Image (cartoon, rainbow, N blue to C red; front, top):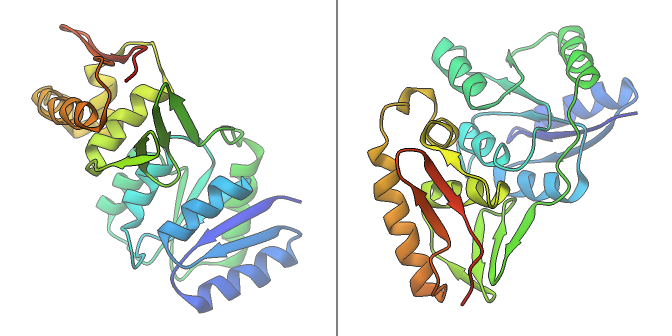
Length: 227
């Protein structure tokens, strides 16, 4: 039996999926918005996520981008959006499959079986510590000595990328693709601007040593530092 998490704002869809999936022998959890869904994902560590794109508190593509900062959990997009551009965007960000509503139950179950056969285990830790800096990936929050640092979504994503690979140099290409997507491959100036803001905010929060190091012409890495 696999544990399936459903994030969808439509109560009727959640009820339908629960009946269908439990009938197929799965355990089912559900959430009506992205915030509760990502929190549930971090706590329960499901085997597969079924994600809607039209969520009330956050676009599903942004939710997908956030969860891909810390887990390779199989994700099946189940959305009423039929536009090929939405499908391409979801797959580029990290979705494993895309099915449009209304859907055929047997097709959904078949696609789930295919994803579960090749699933990657959920990464164990959704909270990363780096000295006095704590990065809560599931809640998209950074704290210094328990005080939240007001980061933009892009600044947080860049910091999360560095924290997940602490000590290793992440190339400009890697960071641009992970945060902005493949279309930003030639926009290295994005990194200079956002890392400058990020460094300033961390210093204001109390990180007195420079913990984000620029490797000229290569990329950036997170180094040991503190207050």
